[in-house]
Length: 260
Image 1 (cartoon, one colour):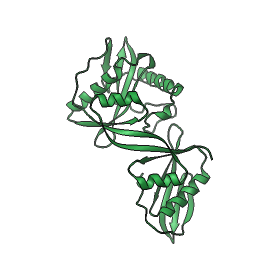
Image 2: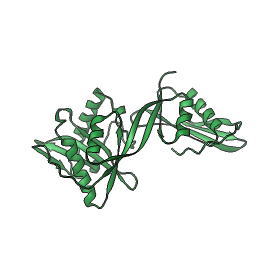
Image 3: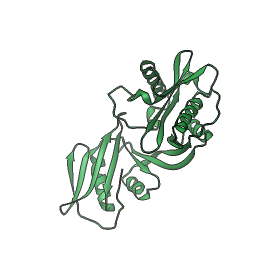
Image 4: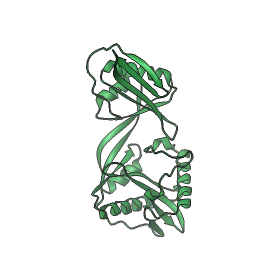
């Protein structure tokens, strides 16, 4: 979201509901702000708001929040204090923090657990890959809930969580897919979007093997670093990325309103 810097002043704006999920604030015939509500594939509604004046932000936020049902979410760069303060004035509270890690791809020597092999990205069989993805997501939903995982918003058919199978490397044991890693090229840096292992195969070094394999592949392609987002409450993921030399570069916070 690109929110303009707030300035002083109290413009008398007229707020228009343009269409479902879109509001505009007009000041004497000029567009002074715009607010949007978008539904992510997991069903959560996220808000974004662009405004020049602090008062326009507040008026738009009040109008949006009065119209929309809870729960509502937004994500803010933690260094953007004005935007963070604006959403907190509107009544949203910090729900969680995600750290962005910058991870060097220089390969490190890691022995895979006995009996584990890695299928490189682009070579996994699509059927077993989708079956593993469904199993892992069901395990996550039954415990912490998928909303606690770093969310990558991708267009996809309802019920289909894998958009591009070629982005996944897979760990295999005794012919079964037991772990997966998704890496995507979002901007100039690849991003490790997901690392996950079946519950009955965890704590054996499979996730680390998948990660170092992928980083090594990127390094051989001439890419020196990758990025990853980690929920600060996820101690295992934090240890995984810091264990391969990842360093914290920035943070975002998810704010939420749940209950009037």
